[in-house]
Image 1 (cartoon, rainbow, N blue to C red):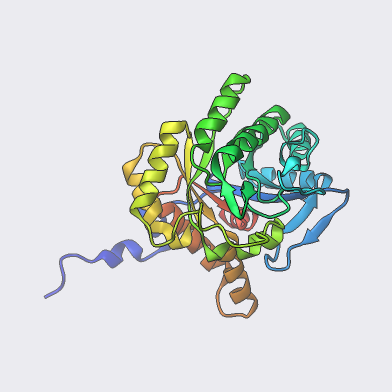
Image 2 (cartoon, one colour; image 1 turned 90 degrees about the horizontal axis):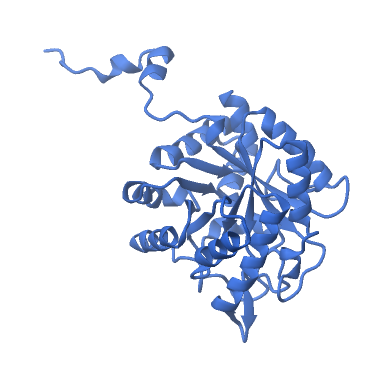
Length: 322
């Protein structure tokens, strides 16, 4: 007796598969991270992240023009300053590397949405995400510095700010300063569930932000914890976050799904450096089909519930997706 139900009928041709496809990935889903450094004509390859670079502002402008032409709607900026100190003063310098890049990008491609990472780790001499005293990262004093950094980005023309430091109360503090200074229209994308992950290794080369002592497990989330992520997200929404993020993405698809199911707010996910580099390394060795694996990973992140994906694959994926 032949089976009544034959699911294979709807898989037989590419045309049928396209018609019944449940999750569709497009360039609109992508946000491209960029590493901005000082100087001119600088485009320094990042050895652990093939295809990614530390770029001076003039080179970043060239890159964002290409990004815009590919239909990618947004970039997020990370700064690599010339000067680092214990208080990360370059982070909130009106003429800092990110602040100058924001202005140049908005002049060159005003339609492109510019998001800025708000954190101290790239700017502090000790590499931690806040003020350090006796080996401990101090939460409340750090909030003042994050306020200054976020405000300086908004004043430079940033369309959105994204605090990634994981200090308690930082969303409320940033919302307060932005609103009081006339930037109530600037949204906050909160790194709400950011885990203390081993997948960040290549990023620390890219952003020159490795901690000089210890690690970040006292403020970033413990990877085994799932329910705690919902608490972190709820708190950030209560404090005024407009978009919440889960980071990393690939090992935390369950968390992305939980957040999407429990909150009526846009969800971002960060396909982080280690996830990117693993694919690049395996592809260079001929072990995997790079493009198929890349698109499968990005589709899985969207299928889990992400409305937007921060990924170093963005330009490559956008070319394939058209």
